[in-house]
Image (cartoon, rainbow, N blue to C red):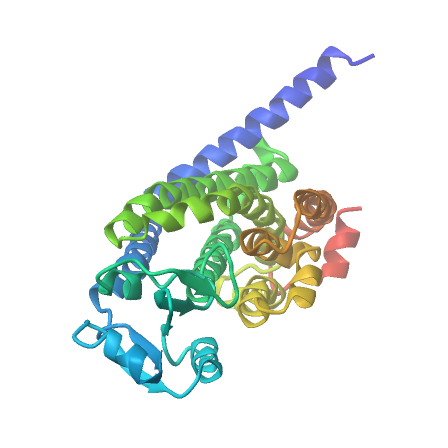
Length: 363
């Protein structure tokens, strides 16, 4: 049966965790660097959505099959390239050298696209012709690459924000404030508060970006894209939040094993690799379904790989749930390990604390 003392201790722990979290949130909301980073992220989002339409090149390029097709679009604002046959036109469309191909038959003009209707070409013609797609898809290849890039960049930005946990931990050790803090709160409450506070900040940034995205897409004339991306966003947000907790615990350990800001670089290597690795892997292998399938079940890359697979239609709901379950289980394990290492290293001053020594000190 739970005693009054145990219940009081439980309440006290969560109350102390909340106080630490509020302190972390307040400190970084007063930081100019936090707001500058958020403004830069918003500026990048708007630039990525608006600038392509502002600085779009000349007229759309098309391959016209034979003189008859070329003649049928003469005087239209299109960059026309005449080819001998349909096979050559298909090759040019698939290689990306032209935006579409113009064919003529008994029914009139017909447009050949790759994975999505070439809207610019269709608008340039006086009447909307039938459109045939070589590789039908919900969105075009260019749009897919753009969305994947945005997902990967947001994941990278949010994950790198966890570096603030390591920096604040080192600052508290270097100024000896940590010795005062542990008198009033357990070390594990300090860790939980830091992770909770910075997770709240990460969620806040995601909400701001999610609210700004429809506005940016609307200004860039890409409102149709939002309906395609929205289902993937429903997976992306929880995956990134859980993935952030996983990395936040490791950032905290990286800060606890050193006592000076100058030494922080020597302890961040592994965490930096786990942050940067998923970004580059997803960018390089986004077109390889087999590699992406593996990455979507690896805890440190699942946060971005699985939402990308849901966006491209390469994964089912049950697979996303399984991946999220693996990620949550990994979070529990890593947080427990990090809690012991953090407890063993936090009060040790001087040089860098070896992980083995931190583990034994917490026993």
